[in-house]
Length: 228
Image 1 (cartoon, one colour):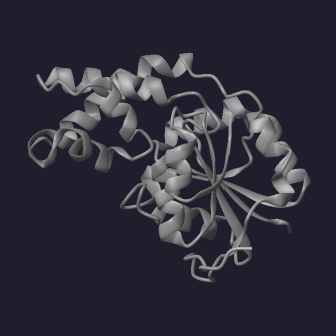
Image 2 (image 1 turned 90 degrees about the vertical axis):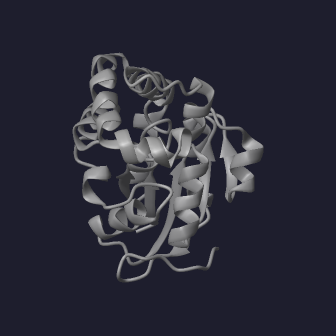
């Protein structure tokens, strides 16, 4: 086996970040809370358990957090049919499998959304995790560690994501990370948060799969600290 590829989904394999930002904006407005869309976008990649407080403050989370998450789901639902895979998503997954990588998706999204994205990417048999599988979403390392356990990884692994929150989760799990600009984050900030390489397109990443940095994944699902 060449190692384990832990792939983020939203903004990395499917083009959803701006849909999510608009859905959150509309959810906040239901409760007369106005958060600029740019600020919401900067938090996309976090799970909903962390996003509300991050963009609107702890007082909004304490008073309306669960209501806002329910409203976001309702606002995002009509957009689900508009979501499209990013160019090269299927090719990336297919090539990784052909190169004998273990591939697992680690998404902060809801399980039913992740299942839909798997259909769009045409990767129905690839293992995946969602926010439903962990207590804390990104930037906590829980999703990455759960993903590794899902595929029984005890070897080398690397995280691929599009946001600074993916970079943070990888670092906390002790794994290297490479990033895509497809979620709207800049190259400089992704590198500052730990990305060893940043790609504009999935096909450019696919061409360098065998050169990805890898670290040892620990037996219990936490990851080793060394990089190649």
